Image (cartoon, rainbow over all chains, first blue to last red; front, side, top):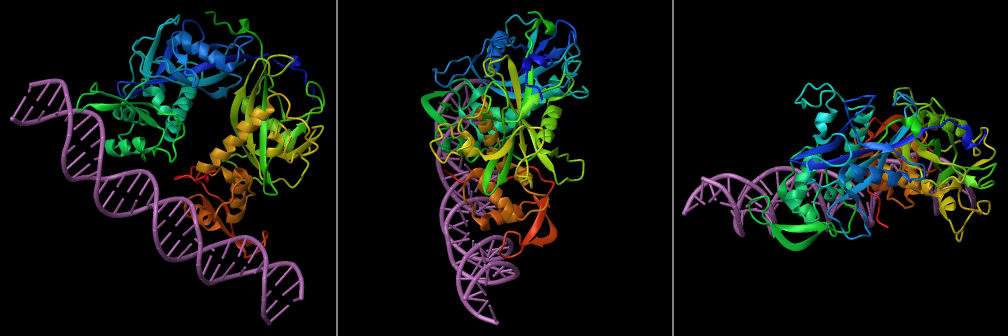
Length: 253
Length: 253
DNA sequence: ACTGATTATCGTCAGGCAGACGACTATGAT
DNA sequence: ATCATAGTCGTCTGCCTGACGATAATCAGT
């Protein structure tokens, strides 16, 4: 078997981004409208080509910054208000996934707090946050956003579904849900993240016991807030613990 | 931003395989010796280039069959004695990971039962099963196999480490450990798989209670065997349940 | 045939954690 | 003042796990 890399067929390599956030109690993903064929006018996940001398993670971070202005959260650096979590999701390489040529896409998953700017800036022609159910509801039979008349371009519905499933399972056993929150947040805000991502209601008392009782998960900042109404709530920052053991249990059905 | 795929730099795309099995109470990985530069004579993970019209999973399955004769387990088809579990692991694309040119490798993880042939056949120049600790023990300071004098080629040590970690965590909450067993196996054999993969000792009584008490995990075949010595043990097949809830807990430390 | 080694399997018990839910607290709105 | 809203602290019960005792059924020697 010959081992000369140059003798083998060339591929284009892209990164696609599943950028998730929680807005108004709903899990939303970033979608951009395609300005050219194929799938012109359809919504798609943000993404782009990996440059000749660029690492895959760097390419994903660059695309994320271009589309949203978010920086990738660096555990070494001091926490920034505009930091997002970024991780590789999976790679999609069906020979027919792009009608033009052979394109392999390394999808990444980004989790971001709710951004103040509802319309992410950048050079993207048109971008928006859309609830993931709208984007994944292929037949459009139920509550479909009128502006989202067609399913996502390419195999992006599949990629989005995989990213959502990754996020849903990963917040069970890690502190990743805090990536959806601002730097300082309350227990109730964190609970609403879990409820939005999982689409279930959680008992506020048991949730409070669980997250405050797990050492290293939350560290109180001393402040309080009433921005959710009701009794003032303690403010917390994410602690050093990244693994949740035992995990947070997702309720059945 | 131009969107013409042909205008972007060409990449070579490969699949690399982390093939794991349990042999003599140790977690082992398949390694092949490289016949040409770079890293000539060094051990590496099996792998090869993705063909022009080949899906990534198909390429991984083809390489797996070439190196080991194993087929990929198809849930629809009747269980075959030579079926292995195959899943995508992660993608590695550091610009300098291959000194010859830009190569992006989509690594896959395969789990196989202990093969009767100790030396996997195929066109590979030289292949062997090696305990993962030997392959990952970079400095060679401890119990290193004399034949494995150098670390793995390319970034394969990192890939192998990621694959091992995936296997270690995934058997916690799925029935994947059965992929290391023959079609029919005993509770004790399954327990020895967990012990080998995790490198810990498990209580046989609690393990027995856990796996037999989880509905759909194991289905008795009616037969018994004494191939492990001692009292005859019931034979089981893997049941339909793929998710283990609550998970099997990996002991601390 | 007996003995010991080995493995499998069943049972018991205490501690920890989760789900269900009651009770109380502190704010803003009317 | 009263109500609605949200946060926080407790209690109780049942399930699961870890630790470990006990018994069962085989094989290798003697």
